[in-house]
Image 1 (tube, one colour):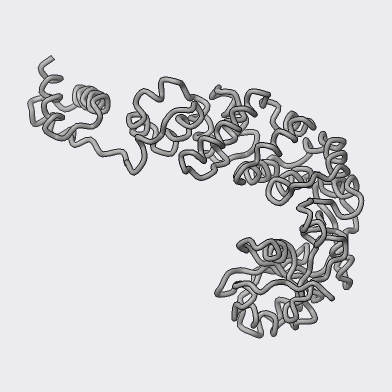
Image 2: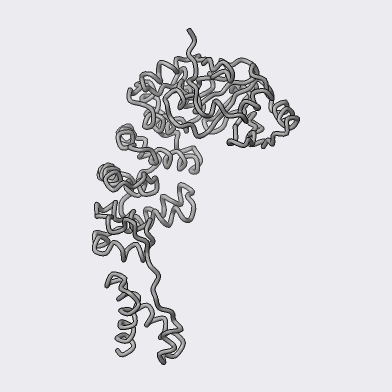
Length: 391
């Protein structure tokens, strides 16, 4: 008896039923993460479909039905249908023609198995009929799901030679879904680790941050270090940094703080702002990400002396980064937001101080005392101001 995709909220969406009618049930299958995660009883974020129709036909059918389409990856056969319940990526069946480990040249195919053969892992190559929900499993993905094993389709080394990023994808998927290690995969990843140097830094950064955003990636990160993966993509990391990541994950859990990939990346780096800045630049991170990474690297044990003062100075998010990374208590920041200094420069001028640099100096002095005293009320601020002016 064939395996069936369990019913889930997304399988009952009216807009998806319309999409099936428009493309034709026999011309398409649900595939990838939506199928995998539904089988695991997980929430489904993104929905992908594979189709025997070529992109131009997909676009034409969607247009005739009044459904907006976006040619998001038209060169590789992908069209995105803009639906009320969320976008759906529709990709024509493909087979690889050539690849250099970074990008592939593909040709459209008509056989579902050919399409499945070019995918990375068996658990990502499960197809579900949109009406009967019958699952097509060409490479043992159902068994691997049951065993919680992430396994490359066919020869692991060959799959990695097709796309070197699959090394990092393997570890991310293992951290999320796996419990049983696949030795062939580990051997291939270790043997081809150096090929990661040829990838764009943006692709590497995306995979690294996605891995670190998982609930508890420590064991996987430790495994990657043992196999020499981290020394290729982040040579700045070392043994004690791995221990710091483990401590950080425990501290996040104890404090009820959500996993954060930038904070966790900071745990893997030495507490040296120039190093953090160089890593952020090399990985093509955004300006905001680089700045936060550098701030976390500037952490000091003294930060714990006045957590609220730290949050007032840096912002709550960055203060939490530093406190968690140094093992300090963040409870003083629970349900607390940095206040606004109840004093304006004009009030200082009104007390007889000439407009100019003296006003800024006095304002900064009052503010520093106000922070040091734990943000007292306006009455105390006025008293502090009187004392500063009198000096």
